[in-house]
Image (tube, rainbow, N blue to C red; front, side):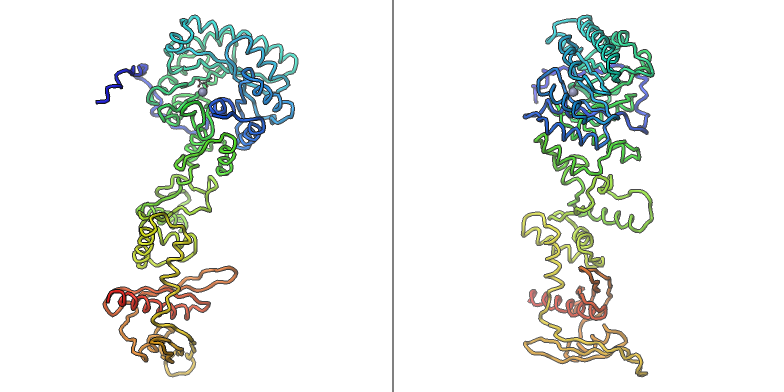
Length: 566
Ligand code: KIV
Ligand code: ZN
């Protein structure tokens, strides 16, 4: 047994038997506040420089964030300078509010107000830690002690705000965070926020943001949701308050905690792109937003150019987005397994048939095009892939619509090549297998010359005459035959040189464009003398000649197979 677990104290959930959040459905996006440039930045090995922060800020604005926490200007000169540059160089659009974080400590609050001078719309976000653990170990104080810190901070902030507003007319809002809210007794969280409200006097027109951080995620997300619902029910003057949540991801469930938190009554969410942030990170805003999008809810954020956002993020943070990161990872719109590939192909065909106006594709929760991924192969080929996958790649990447009966044979050829290579095959390699096995097959029979004459006007019942030269056994043989169609004329021509045992089963044609001109492709299915199926493919500008080439290809392939078996 793993005895070490005994040293951990289990989280004690609050009692909320009449909770209502489990029955709620999110039908509207919350207010989003990006904390990338503060919580995200402070967690980087190398925090962003001015240039990187500006680029990141502009990307956040482009995505549609209207509230952006830009830093901790009282914490360092760099942070201070970055905020001054944003303000003085007019980088902040009029409809965007910059948020600044500050501990509830007088000299830091003073410095913060110096830093925001000249900004039009600001949220001054102050916090102090309230959890049982922090009170006991870090601050060595009781609840009264931490409440005094918050109230004193609120008073100074109000005083400085009144002065600044009188001077500049800036729109300054307040945000208070009882830091480590989820580790604080819930009644105490409500009480300390009430005390802050008494100082700041919020109204429905000028609401106070009360931000309830899951500073360290310590329990299943339902526990956080219970805390949020309790808080929303018990905080007085609820309509004068914006309840904000700020989940971290220590247990890997920040997305769930965010979604359940919204169901539990939160109006606003703080988080970061790709979940960057302290330790295991913050809630990933992109994932929460795209989850909403996939449920038919407009998130109000635009991730249609996710690849570019990701490039910016990786450049500025020097962090990497994992291959399996929801919506953004390299592999998230890729299926390797045969059954998945088959189902995706069918789903895509179903969409193309026009039978539905919705996105209904198995294994693809969203349309990859919605995050700018339409040009990459959705299905990739490795040794797990099924017959449908190889055919899908031929269709998606090269336009060849292989008939169903050909899929198992082509799938086997591709799988064998994968096994030999011991790795994934690129679409071009799949095409090369197709070319070698179907298009470049000229032995033992090489059709050197061919011509079709349409004789339907001659009145003798014969419609088509075939004439050509077939090279085999190192000699050229003139062949000639007549029939009621090109394929039957060719079969008769083959009989004249003793090729008599192949039976025509079926064929399919399609047009394929290569460059400017369009060519005909014919897929031929014959039965070989030993009773097995023989498939061939022919391409020509003339559809009849494409079929004839397909027939000789099928015969060549069957003869080769016979030769290999002997
Ligand atoms: O995680 C946290 O508690 C914070 C606060 C400062 C809001 O980042
Ligand atoms: Zn945080």
